[in-house]
Image 1 (tube, rainbow, N blue to C red):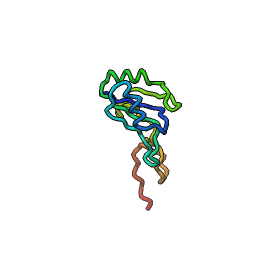
Image 2 (image 1 turned 90 degrees about the vertical axis):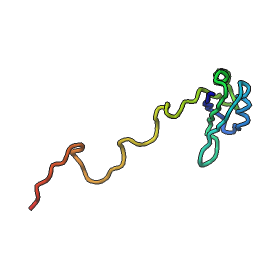
Image 3 (image 1 turned 90 degrees about the horizontal axis):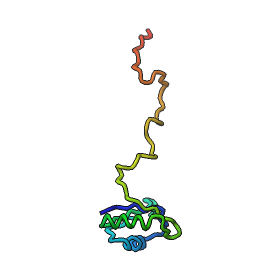
Image 4 (image 1 turned 180 degrees about the horizontal axis):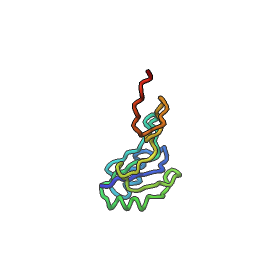
Length: 116
């Protein structure tokens, strides 16, 4: 079993079209065309799960760069989410804040003498 990433898909590509293209190289277990949550429109990539790893490798070799709907497909083995580098997103140590001025960041504050 091997999961393939198929990128640069025309947004009009259907699951049956994709199945036809890949089944020429071996049995296809599952196809997932990724769609936008809000619009429901294809995001231009999909995942194709092929039963036989050897046939999946042949499909990659045969179809990577092949045109579908006027676009050159980008096909490779799909990587699990944990293997991908973290990118984009917000976070870290920026933003937020407000409040008073703190000239001594990271240092413990000394207690003050009472004013009276």
